[in-house]
Amino acid sequence: MRTLITLSMLSLIVFTLAACDDGADSSNNTSNVNNTSNVNNTSNVNNTSNVNNTSNTNNTTTTNNSNNTNNTTTTNNSNNTNNTNNTTTTCVPDPSGYECSDCIDNDGDGLIDGMDPGCISSDDRLEGSFSTDIPGDDTNTTYQDCWFDGNSGGGDDGCNVHICCILDECPTEYQGTYDPASCETAVTQDCVDNCDPFVVPGCDCFGCCTICEGSDCYDIFIGSPRISPECTQDTISDPLACPRCTPQEECGAPCDPAGCILCPGMTEEDLPPECTGETVCPDEQQPCTVTAECESGFYCATGCCIPIPNIG
Ligand SMILES: [Ca+2]
Ligand SMILES: [Ca+2]
Ligand SMILES: [Ca+2]
Image (cartoon, rainbow, N blue to C red; front, side, top):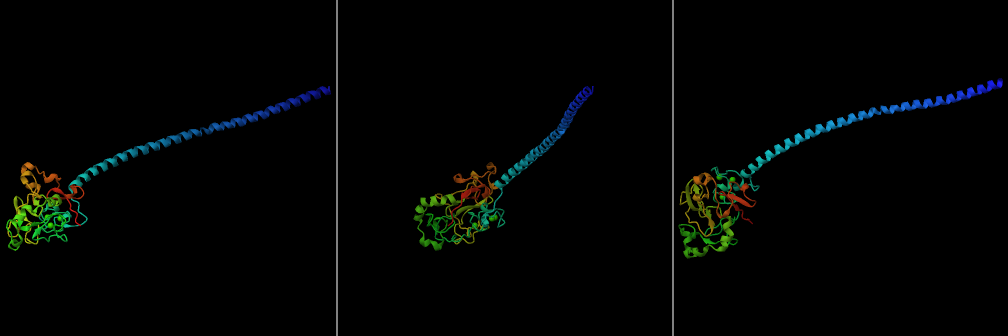
């Protein structure tokens, strides 16, 4: 009987122990439930909201950028267009500061730089005088060389013409060296080749120019200030101050108002109505109102771009 009880008790103990083992399994399951806290990583959903925030930021930035870019581009374009127009019509002073390329009406006659008959090149230092005041220039008397190459003497241009071949009346002091027959061959091809490209419209190679004041024009000799020091823009109507001359047809660029080619001292307003304010230039030169409209190395004189001589 005790043995049976003992066996029963042993069975009960074993059963209990087995039941205790089941209890241990239950606690493991609980820890698994805690893993459901991983599900709390629904904090991942928060990450999703972060993504939304990022996309919002991008949208805002993109929109602003596109607006800013358009505004900037439009403004710059309109400004550039205006600047371009200004550049083609606005005078640009030359760094040399010489009166004939400084964009200033130095003598107050309403004509500026190359539109003033007192200017024959960008290196001309005096706008109010037919003299250039270039060192070594303005010194010819008996024989004239190219008046537009910026120096005196015919050694570098092949021009050597007696002053009385140019003037209508030969001054007494020059008659002794004057041979009228020499005028027939005085203008050489060498002279034409070297000088003609630099001549201001309205002049011949030696400084016999058709200078105008309004519609009043005179063929006067401005190529030697030593011969006619009293000749200025104010005295062009006085034949004693400004000796008369006849332009040499072989070398030079005559003006022709009827053909819309300006003479020195004229403006577009002095041309006939049929020109409609448009200037024509001889020798296929480019028309201009200021040097800034000409190619580099050219000077706007009497409405036409002429090459600037190399004054060495
Ligand atoms: Ca000037
Ligand atoms: Ca002037
Ligand atoms: Ca001058």
